Image 1: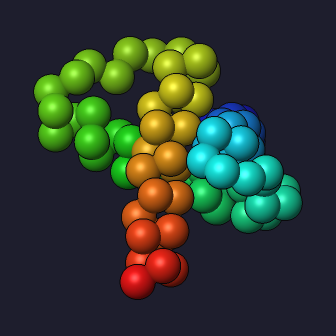
Image 2: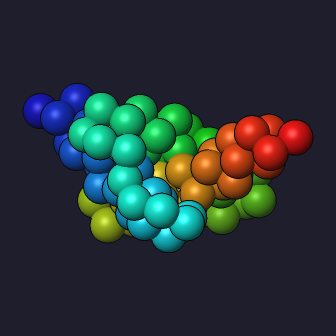
Length: 81
């Protein structure tokens, strides 16, 4: 059941990040990949900054979305260069 929650958080976070960063989503698989990678980036950033990432699905979505937004900004910066 844990992997299903992880994938669901990835889909939601990827969709939110795609919506927040100039444009729509990237399809189901694209959103999931962006969200899952974003969750790893968000977890690293929050840990690096010393911010406690609380428990719960909402907090997981928030952290994953922030990480996915950072990922999209990085990808777009390299695309333009």
